Image (cartoon, rainbow, N blue to C red; front, side, top):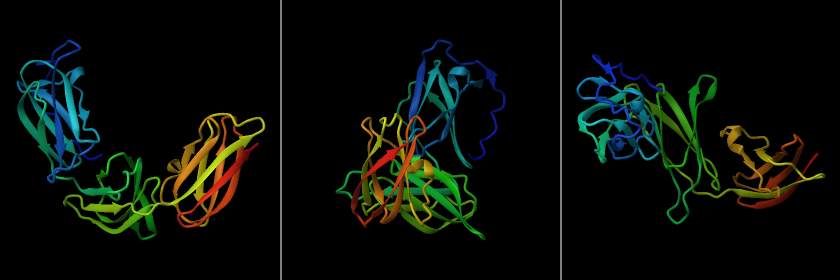
Amino acid sequence: MGAIPGELAGERPGEGVDDSPEGGVISGVVTDTEGGPLVGVRVEAVASTGGAPGLDLLPVLTDGDGRFAVTGLGHGRYDLRFSLGTVGARVLAVPVDTDQLTVRLARPQGVLVVVRTPADLAPAGLCHVVLERQTQAGWARDHVARTLKNRLLLWSIRPGWYRATAWASPFLPVTSDAIEVREGEPAPIVELALLARGAVIEGVVRGDPPAVAPVRVAWRRLGATWPIPPSALTVEAHADGSFCLRGLAAGPHRVTALDGEGRLGSVQVELAEGGSAAVEIPVS
């Protein structure tokens, strides 16, 4: 995370704070200058009279839609402080029970990744994003993130050249390179379009005695460097041992199963582009 501005001077603990478990609320949304939601913005509230936040007024973070809610407020007005990396803003004397406050911040130095899917297809589920930095020794992984939204801001990133890869089942991963992050400039917008559906492996894990839950199934493409971290390449099989892997590239894959008692099994399967395969993995 980036640097957070120092504490306000002259704060007095407890002033302006309602000691009851309930209280007033100030809520709203934080966006960038183009109206896109900013996730993970730190929001702090302090009574406009100079009082410091108490236990009910701990800082909050904006959610995946850029929304926030500061709760447990006493009567009166509060000064709100917003910070994300090297950028910040203050809104003074906000009345308690304000519920549609909109704050706009410039995007901090970093990369804004926008992942899109065709309009005629259902949006992708959990999306994995990997940002790699170009070094003298080659590409080095810099950031790994996951998002259920189509926008993800990666910030506090050093100046330099980067490439970004996004992957979400059932689509094949896509990469954008030649991304330049410049000192003191807002995050460039990188659009990644998930267009091509990948191959599918459907299978079942068998054992004698039967496989013991939880059964984890992992896969990797042989002879290729996969940019997505291993934790994203694992699924949990259903109660009957069945599983389905989607969004896979063509070529040879190794599929491995591990059950709750540590029994292991694996098979190798060759996938055609956009094709499918059925496998059975015995564990012993």
